[in-house]
Image 1 (cartoon, one colour):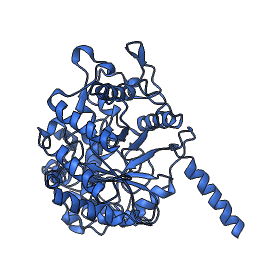
Image 2: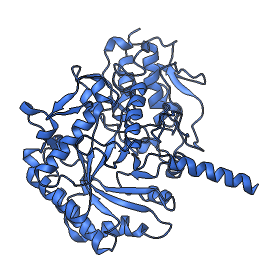
Image 3: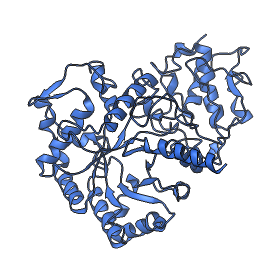
Amino acid sequence: MAGRHFLIWLISIGFYCSMVEGLGVNWGTLATHPLPPNIVVQLLKDNGINKVKLFDADAKMMSALAGSGIEVMVAIPNNQLAAMNDYTTAKEWVRKNVTRYHFDGGVNITYVAVGNEPFLKSYNDSFSNVTFPALQNIQNALNEAGVGDSVKATVPLNADVYESPAGNAVPSAGRFRSDINDVMTQIVQFFNQNGAPFTVNIYPFLSLYGNDNFPLDFAFFDGASPPVVDNGIEYTNVFDANFDTLVSALNAVGLGNLPIIVGEVGWPTDGDKSAEASYAQRFYNGLLKRLAAGQGTPLRPNQYLEVYLFGLLDEDAKSVAPGNFERHWGIFRYDGQPKFPVDLSGQGQNKMLAAAKNVEYLPQKWCVFNPDAKDLSKLADNVNFACTFSDCTSLGSGSTCSNLDANGGASYAFNMYYQVQNQDDTSCFFQGLAMETAQDPSTADCKFTVQIKTSASASSFPPLLMAFVSLPLAFFLL
C-alpha cells in the first residue's frame, strides 16, 4: 500500500511540474450561483494551477486558499481607491487583507492589485487622480508592515493606456496615452523604485471583435497573415505587437527593462461569432506553447513571462456592456466542467482538464415553453422579462443557441430565469406560457443549464446588468 501511495505521489509531482512556469488564472465571482471557494481551490490544485489573481480579498476565498501554497494576487476594487488615499485606511486594509494571512500555513500573497483598469477611457477620468496615491499608500503600508519585500503593489491596466499614432501604427512608436502620460510616468517610476511589475491586460480577441476587416489569423500565434514589419522586425500576431508597444512606451520614459506581468489574456467561448470553443482552444494552444518554449516577443525575445489566463470560470452576472461574450471567458463552465481539451504544460498533448469535484446541483428539471399555450401575444414581453433577470447571451447572433427556433428560444430564456430563481415553482409560469419538465431540452450545440446549489439566495441578486439580448420580435412569433 505504501508503494502505491508513493507512485501516486510521483505521478502527482510529475503532473504539477509539467505546468507552464509562471502560469496563473483569474478567479472572478460575478455569478448568480458561484462555486463554493473550497471546491474552486481544489479545482486549481487538481489541475496544477499554482497562481491565482482575485478581484477583491473575500474572506471565504482567502480562507479556502490558506495552506494551499497557491500564489495569490489580492485586489482593491476601483470603488475603494479614493478611500486608500488616506494612509491610515490603507494601513488598515493591508492589516485586514494581507498581514492577517501572512503566516506559515496561511495565504501565499505575492501581489496587491490596486484597482482594475482604472484608466479605461470609458471611466471618464473617474479614477485618474486617486490611483497613484492609493498605490503609494498601499506599497508603503506593505513596507511598514514588514512584508514589502515579498508582496508588491501593482495596478492591472488595460492595453489602452498606451498607443501608437494613427499615422505610424507600429510597436516601436508606442507611447503612453497623452492624457495620462504624466501619471503613468509617475506610476512606472514608483514600480521601478519598489521592485514591482507593470501589469497589463491584453486581449487579441477584442482586436477581432466587431472589426470584420481585422485579419483572423493575426489574432492567433499560428496564423499565416502577412506580418507587420517595424524597422525590420516582423510581427506575426497581435499579442506580440501589443506587448512590444508597451515595451516601447516604457523605453520612452527610460524604463524599458521594467518587469511586465500579463494580468489577463484569454478567449471567450460564446456570445459572439468569434467567441467559440475551437478558437479558444487554438488561441490557448499557441499561447501555452509559446510560454513553454520560453519565447518572448521580438523586443524581449527570451524573457520569462508571468501570465494569468482570463478566466477560470464563466460568470453569468457580469455586465455585458462590452459585449455578450463577457460572461463566457472561463476555461471552465459555471459549474467547473472543462469546455475543451487543452494542455497547460504547453506540449500540445491536449486533454480535458480535471473537473470540479463534489458539485451539488439543483434537481434535474427545466422550465420550457408550453406548447399548449393559447395566447402568444405576451410571449415577447415574458421572454424580455426572463432575460432581464437572467443570462440570455447564448441566444445572441452567432452564439451557441442562436439556431434555436422560436419555441426553443423562449424555452431557453424561461429556463435561465427559472434556474436563477433556484427552480422555484412560481418562476415557471410566465402567464401560462411555460411549464416544468424532467426531459432535458438541450441540443447538440445549446446546453440548457441546471444550476448548482448555493448558499446565496437568488432573490438577493439585483437585476443582471444589461442582461437582455436584443432579438427580433419575429424570433418569438410562431
